[in-house]
Length: 201
Image (cartoon, rainbow, N blue to C red; front, side):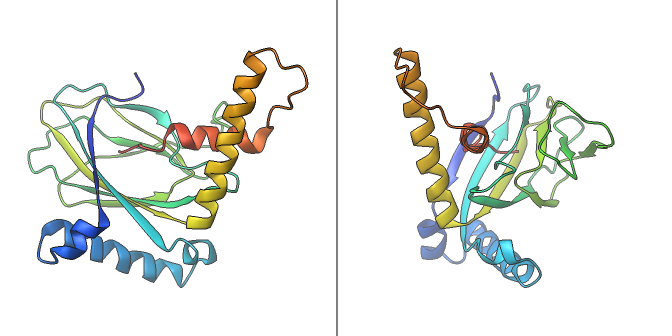
């Protein structure tokens, strides 16, 4: 399997209705982070929406294979991934491994130095959603992380539309339709992103 964690999506409405809760405070902090970063990045300025997910890896879990949270080409809805770790008993394993300066070619890692980041308690890691990353096999303690994705609503809608078209074309091709034109590299990137849509670190 690609991953073996347990996940829960956190609804923004729940966080705003109970402003004193830890998740509500975290949501406010993430929106403030997005607003601050948006002043220096036009692409992030368009990422006006957030989604939140909590995931737990059990002790000795296998982790999550190398993947992206977003396609490296547009349209790609997710722009930024922010991971907040909640692991006071962390004792090793479960590192986030990240490949920066991504050129979109997973087969060629020449010149791309892997970065390993320990999921230490109260640590926040922020990176562009198009970068490749994985979660290493976990150690002896549970591993808990709260992920926020900042995304562009318009590009996400376009991305989903292209993905649905690609899936329909693939199904028609499998049924023997010779006159079907299969989507090219752009939709392939969307498919990669869509396959990781529930991804968590």
